[in-house]
Amino acid sequence: MKTAVQQRRNRFLLALALVAAPALAVDPVVTGPAPVGTVQVVRPKSITVQRAKNPSMAPVKGKILSVHSPFETGDCSLCHEHKSAKNPGKVIIPGDAGCYVCHEDFLDMTKRRFQHAPDKIACMTCHNPHNANQKALLTSATPQLCLDCHTGIGQWMSQRVQHGSLTEGANCMNCHNAHASNVENLLKRLPFDLCVNCHSRDDIVDHNGVKITNIKALLEQNKVHHGPVAQKDCSACHLPHGSNVFRLLAAPYPSTFYAPFDPKTYEMCFGCHDETLVTIERTTTATRFRDGDRNLHFLHVNKPDRGRTCRACHEVHASQRTYQIRESVPYGSKGYLLKVNFEKRPDGGNCTQTCHTARSYTNAAAPQAKAK
Image (tube, rainbow, N blue to C red):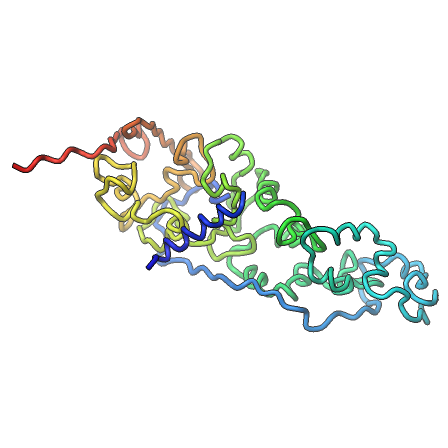
């Protein structure tokens, strides 16, 4: 029977095969011990339901933020039988067809591959034809208007770490077209392009106020990309709507430079990488980072208190070096850059004057003595 790790890995590899699709940003690393216990990753189902009751189409009162032009000018006859607002009569052309008389540009959207369900049912599912207390004649404010139907997304958004794109600016519409799109899930652009387009600035911070790396610049300047990045699949590691793990990660991963080793805290990595990489002390097959058969991943990571986490040596988005080996790692809350100084050799490698004095390793196993 396949283990949970194997099942996760197989699902990821299948996703890569089906799609031509940024994981952790470089941020100052806390060097103290990691919190005891593991983070519970809650995965709500993405449920979509039909709104229980459609909003009233009558003109609203209160603070008005948008008004339909015919209603504002008092010419009800554009949509109704009579011009008078006191007695407009029936709607001349019912349904969306009446909207398209003026909003002809939206007819082109109906030809797009993916249609928003309310858009196929009626414009008035989301818009008031007279006036509104919201912009764009919306019947209620976003994102709540969206969450009335997309209840599962609301559960994601209630988690500890929220995506800034859902809480700032146009929120849901930062990424989605509310009417129709040629990209699945009504995205405005392909997912990877959407992510990199926003994560191309130097002023973005996470939920703790820590500066997030300019991913676009990082990828352009470092051509050795992590597998999910090379496949343009940010969602292999990140959840776009919300998570209980820092950086919107899809599974637990230590947020510190040092951490007691526990396979549960590395679920993010072990979803693809075999955990024997760091769980067996002696091997000639699990990793090339070994001195003979001495597993140096195990030596660095598998400790009960100050194990070095993956980030100590690897940059998980992109690097100049194979295996995403870092040039340096931010160390401490002030962001001091600790040089890694790794040099690869055909039969091993060297680390010079980094966390320790100069060390070298040879990954060829020592010859076994013949039995007499």
